[in-house]
Length: 199
Image (cartoon, rainbow, N blue to C red):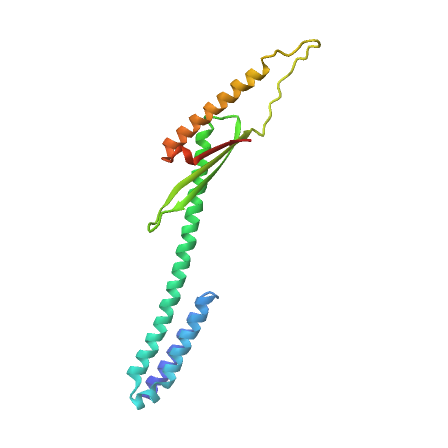
């Protein structure tokens, strides 16, 4: 009996030392040291507990409390991991969606700089997100091509200059409507939730 008791103590100490060397430092190492300490105490007190005859109930209570604490810790860590993973996936989906919209818009406004901000909302009670709003900012390209200008002294501007700007604005508005229609059909979002701003 004493030989078995000493072998148990040695086995627990060796196991604790091995686990201490293998497990990296952090929260898990603290729990491992605590757990090995409890086992060491039980191994040392085993003959005394056997003499009193209360070992089954005492061991059962200790193990149940230990398992409850560990399960609660694992549950909290699991929930935190799920939240961070969900946030990462949402950001990844949003950035890919914005890149895709920009690439699709380049066929309509190839010489412009396009900035897209997509707003996603989580569907209540489900594990999915819906596209709720798209903000598109279209501005001039950073590359400016300057074309040569011929200046003739004495010429006057024609009075139709303001008419040309009205035609250009109408073309831009028509192009924006085409873009809204295209984005609405592609991403199945109502046109009223697509906002296009020109810089």
